[in-house]
Every structure is written in C-alpha cells, then in structure tokens.
Image (cartoon, rainbow, N blue to C red):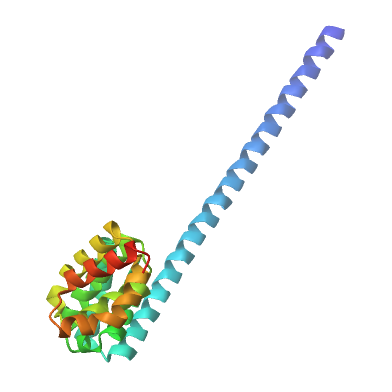
Length: 207
C-alpha cells in the first residue's frame, strides 16, 4: 500500500542518515586526532629546538670563558635557575653570561662572580626595558670605571635604574655619557651616585 511504501521509504532515509552521521562522526574524530597529533609534534619540535639552541649557547660560553666540567655545569645550571626568576629564557641568560664576560673579562676567574653580575644585568634590563647587550655593556663599563667588585653589582643597578626612571637621559644616553666621564669622575673623587645626578641635571638642561 502507499502507507507501507511511505514507512519503508522513511526507514531507508533514517538508515541512510544514521550511516551518514556515523561516517561524519568518524571523519571528525579522525580530523581531531590528526590536529592533536600535529599540535603535539609542533610542541615537541619547539622543545627540541629550544634545547639545541641552549646547548649551543652553553658551548659558545665554554669557548669564550674557557669553562669546562664542573665550572661549565655551574653556569649551565645557573642559566636555567636565573631564567625561572626573570623574563628571559635560559638561552638568553646564557647569552647574557657571554655579554657580561666580554664587558668584564676579570669575571672569567670566578663563575660565582659572573653569575652575580649577570643576575644584576638581567635585573637592569628588565627594570628599564633595555636590551641585554646594552645593559651588560653599560653596567660592566660603569663598574670597571669605578673599580666596583661583583658584589656591588646590585647597588650599581639600583642607581642606574633610578637615574633612568627619574632623570631625563635614557639608558643609552646615560651609558654614552658615562663612557666619557666615568673614569675621570672616579679619579677626582665623585661617586657613581653623584655622577649620575650631575649627568641627569645636564640632560634636563638639554646637554
């Protein structure tokens, strides 16, 4: 009858829909599975790349500083530890070690001293938004000019950060000025604090 034919037709439509729905569900599951797998691969690939870059930075650090064995392991561990308490990655911290060592070769004699000044450099760069290379150069030059030891690095960072924060001269302008007057100021008995204050006064007047 027509009624029986209609019911049969509807049943076939339902069966086809169910089959299509199952096929689409399987397809979606497959797509999701592939997407998750690709995301996991990208994450793994990124992690491997980060590891390789860090190991290369440590190898470069060894070549520059001459550190090997336990000394190199100390710097490697220090890079990871400092990365956890700063906005920089372990690779960037390892690069900072190199920059600081270049600015203050005397620090090559002590891994602990190199770590201390590098930590101060990271703090300075983060405080004033400077590049690590600029922070390392300015801090290193200033400490060299005023004959400061590694345990005074924090004090120099505080002075530089306050000088930039409250003065007119930027970090780069201050660093350029200190390059010319720092050693002379120390020679005539003008402290690092006083030197910064005088330079900022001059900067405020457009000099």
